[in-house]
Image (tube, rainbow, N blue to C red; front, top):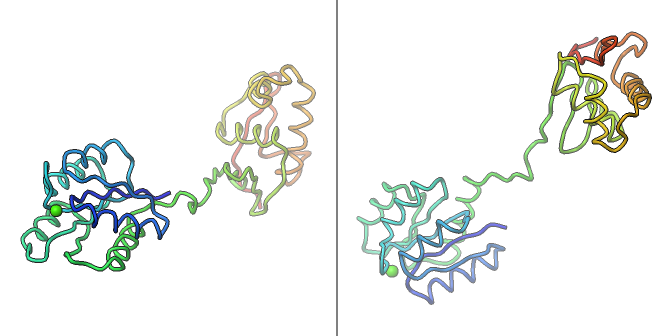
Length: 231
Ligand code: CA
């Protein structure tokens, strides 16, 4: 949910902006004086600030400076028509955009949308993290294992084991460590079970499971993962 703070002392104007933002699916709060507005901004986590310049208490310029010091939240300044100076000063202070009063709500909403598009990081659209080790990779968020470009199904226990191997590639991992971390304490001590899952993992990721190049047995100790790229 995108949250917007409106700092504007003309209450009907603030309410109208809030209403228009609400219709677009944005959640908005209102502050009608400068000091309270800055306090709200610093306490809340807002994605955008709509800021009037002429305010009781702290004025818009002071607020804009403080907001800039606090981070990268985009700011749209609302300014009176004859206040050309304010426009310039506002932008010099780090405001991202301004709208001159009187303005149409559609114009303001368009500015808000454009600014959010420019500045927001939509985490839902980020590519999943792929941890690669030679020709084997795991996508953590999707719980997928990719072997030579193909997605391979592995059960959760084998996914955890492979994750441990890949994160510790090149290092020897003891059987005890693999069992306790892989089984997360549930079946502690199931040594035979570890061998079974290692064999199954090899069948899935090795070209020739009988002569593994990725999951290497270290006699008397455990296993080591090597990040080879096989043809
Ligand atoms: Ca005002």
